[in-house]
Length: 142
Image 1: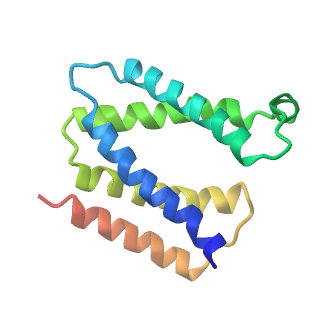
Image 2: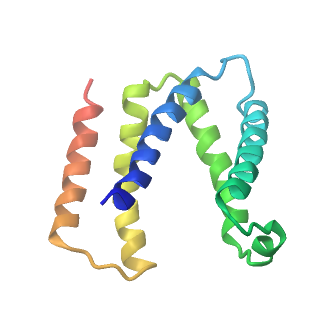
């Protein structure tokens, strides 16, 4: 059970700190300049953890296995990070920006799963879409 739960617990904990950090980037600092520091720390941390957690670590061998995904993910991560920082600079509250994004994302990913990965569209997912839409309506009432 712990092997099933700990990855999502790490995602949740990391996302809490991520949102706090994104909201705390100085307004007068360019988000892209901020991200150069972020990615430098991320690169060093990833490399150190790779060698610390892999007994027979061989980064060249790992790089020989690469496909398109890490390259696109690098671009996508920049979009995520810059999008959040600009959203917070534009005045989005930390209490709602992530929730609105997550609800819209959940709906979109149901259809990505359906059309790209051939996952099934169940009644639970349809109800989930309705709940997400209702939540978006409630959270954006003024």
